[in-house]
Length: 157
Image 1 (cartoon, rainbow, N blue to C red):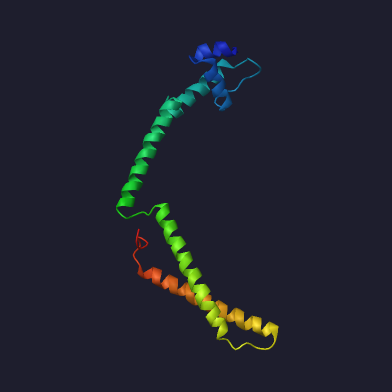
Image 2: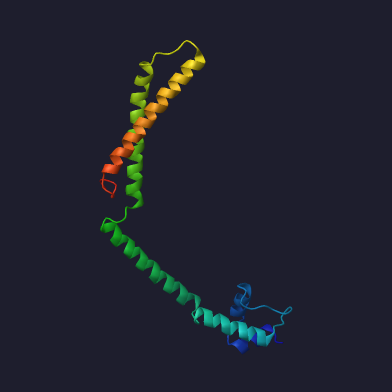
């Protein structure tokens, strides 16, 4: 058994590093300011082997390099036309929304005006719903058919 300061010296770490190892679950106290030296040494060695002795700074640097490499790959793929960026995709979606909205606001009133409506309110509702559903499906089918004929890069960028 050892105190915190004794175990820190034994493992060649600072007391702050020892507290961090305890907080992350690598080491565990037996009681207040009382550590099992043998158990802690074995767990600390296993921890070093698993982390390859890297400090947090080294791990972060390694992750940063990997992230930068991944970003460079994505940018190259985007330039090659294999990816679209978020802004381009959102522009296409907004454009499609406007086109569908325009089709709905221009076609649906005309469709309704051409209907022969029954006298009964319930029957009128059924006829109108049916006509609107049919026209909406037609609008959507037309959008999908036109999209399938475009190139995979979503048209213009």
